[in-house]
Length: 72
Image 1: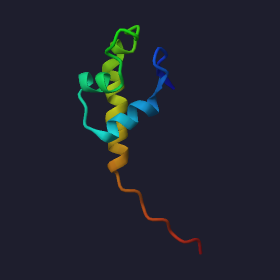
Image 2 (image 1 turned 90 degrees about the horizontal axis):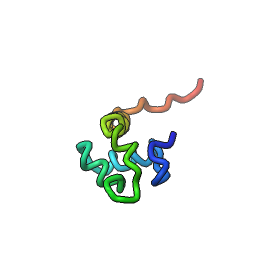
Image 3 (image 1 turned 90 degrees about the vertical axis):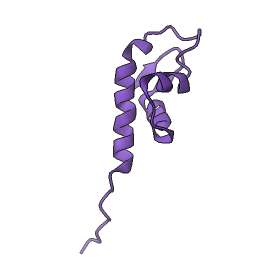
């Protein structure tokens, strides 16, 4: 899903930033380039939701996945 139409950013873009660092809402907006004059600011209003996406991605990446079991 797109989270910023001005920049063409998706939830996956937000998650990728979160996997590289442990951002605050301000750091996340800056890393995504949403703090410049070329962005309308609607997505900035949803900074907490964007941070939620980012933190959720970090949690999923640290949860160990079960080893594949051979089919018998």
